[in-house]
Image (cartoon, rainbow, N blue to C red; front, side):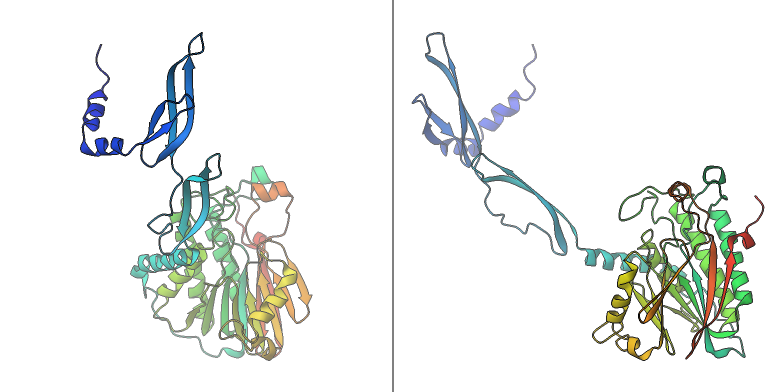
Length: 408
């Protein structure tokens, strides 16, 4: 019979000076039978096992040992810029810690900073690709046209046979959104200023897992995320170029949604780099999910709408009041007309709260399997609202999905 393959290694280990020194450090203890037993250094007795013959005499005895309770570590448990997420501790019968596992992850702030830096570096090659174009003349300085698009969900897949509605995929999304934008821009007044508003969830998902970031729900996706972001950028660039032909100043608002909290930041950074050489384009910083802008006596607030709507007036009053968001501290008191745009729920809703009006946006998309099963049947549309610099809302129009839908 071949000898045990590790026996030679064990014998060699026992011959080492370190092993012999450890044996010499063993403590001598008394077993229940009175016999002396040895315990390795750094260990303690956990229990005894005794083998007796028929007459009750002890014939053999085993001693079970375990490591002594752990001492405080001599190194930092969590690296710098990391935060403890959870801990697991193994205790002995006396309640003393034997071993502990610590689960840590980079802090959210550090992750966000790294994400922004990485995205900025990867998009550097697109810097300044959009050439400046001449501004239109004879624009009305007292008007601002807001082009408000509800949750676009670019990348969503829907089959009409399953939902009782219409089909939807990347190709259809690009065609319908671009056609809807053209109609809204064509019918809008010649305002000097325009706002391109993406209220959030412009992207249906933000990685190839096709899971929602927070709750990890699987969504119906059409393509790889790389293709999705390409179509989304194409849609936005086409719209911004058309807006620059129509209006003198264009503001871009990319609100983070629950489907694309990081994807919205990617879109904002990309538009900022693409139109870096175009002074007539201004991209709002969307690091904060609550965004604010102002046009004369009009206060515009933007958020995706995941918080309770009843809380929004107090949130906006706090952010746009003394001690609020930097640069917005006096807007609540100085603006007579206040409106907050929200999305998330895909249906039309206008509520007037004390001091502010809530405008919930519809979406142009078809309903997918989840929405169909939940019984959602809201009409698909996009709107454009025009505001006067001192008198508030003056004009409103909308485009329905049926106007831009092509025969399938």
